[in-house]
Length: 79
View 1: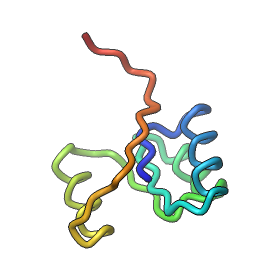
View 2 (view 1 turned 180 degrees about the vertical axis):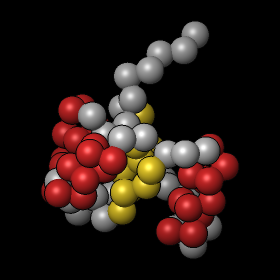
View 3 (view 1 turned 45 degrees about the horizontal axis):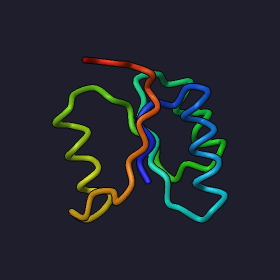
View 4 (view 1 turned 135 degrees about the vertical axis):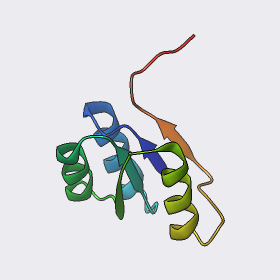
């Protein structure tokens, strides 16, 4: 499970998913949010720097399988 955005809502999702046994990857721009995500059960924490870099790292971590579930918790709305 990838959780994109590790603020309050993202941290809750990390905790819930990890408590249910999921392997959780937290993705965020903020180092403090990533530390919190690790404390709440994220197996990996990835700093978002560039879109392509995030995809590369996820492919490496999952041996090319990517994530079956992606939860968007950034709060950013684009229309």
